[in-house]
Image (tube, rainbow, N blue to C red; front, side, top):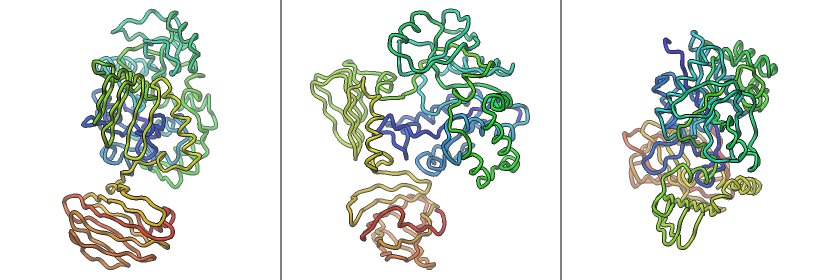
Length: 471
């Protein structure tokens, strides 16, 4: 490749701080609000003028690659982590991959997939400056000029800074990284200057980052060397070999592993309308408001209400005489919170996890690489789903030990396999599937196939699915 600049987008997160809209199976980076692109799609669009679309590498997991993110990810370069080990192992693996596909010491521009950036030209100008500095062997991070004494972000302290001015792209050595500060400390940072919000954006040569792994996290560096020798087959990865090696990686962020220790780290102060959308409060702050200070999505009516974030996903939401609230409505869960306490959603997530609630992980509609399913009814002895299968796709060949299934075709024509025998089930026709009968569903048509599936029996758990082949 002639262009050695690569965008590395980290897209494996679960985004549960924006529950109930963002969930494990459909995290915030892949959410589309109305007709807008997702945060992930906007991230790809922002970086491609610098790198080209062919030089964008997505680091994600199987859950997203073959689930909710499939349609957004399928035409991009994917690097699939075998398991979540935080950002340092993910970035280390990406560096190995870049060194395989580009021999001209590639430069990585590492970006989170779920941030908002208002001023795209200013963003690209800063990244271009960072690339030039990275070519000198520096590890460059982008420090966002703080507008408020915010306690929700980590900070970067620059050495010998000058007051920030829009349009400048000066590069300063980093003195230290600071954890999320107390309010009075954040106020001092804003007053004294030289402190910048840590945006989690890093630019460096892949070889330089590997050197720093070996220096500051030698155990991980040794594992990366082993992965490089044993798991890579040219540009391809043997995931059977990768998994046991990658699982030994320390679960640690790139900040703790390298950035806070390395003497090569520099910061470019910037201002381009950045938000990490880390809670509903930040989401509210990043979006345009109406005359009463409300942010509204969907079917929302407000009367004598101000400074609210109101989201309707499936039905009318009416707010009367309320202020400073976040109200998030989905088909199966509603969040009501004071907007300034929305960071505490993570406490609700912990409680939901203890209760093993389905609403924590999945929406009523769940995306799969073959299509989607929507839960219409969910009761102890039966449930009803609507299945959508894309043209040319199939559901895996499988059977169930305990439950029966009944498929009714409401749109299109289905090719159904029962115990190895194929049949066509046309629209308004149905088929019964008793327990232990091997079955598969395929859409041979050119438009979506839609099926109403009724499951019944004394046990309907997912572990009653015995898969014989993948979809």
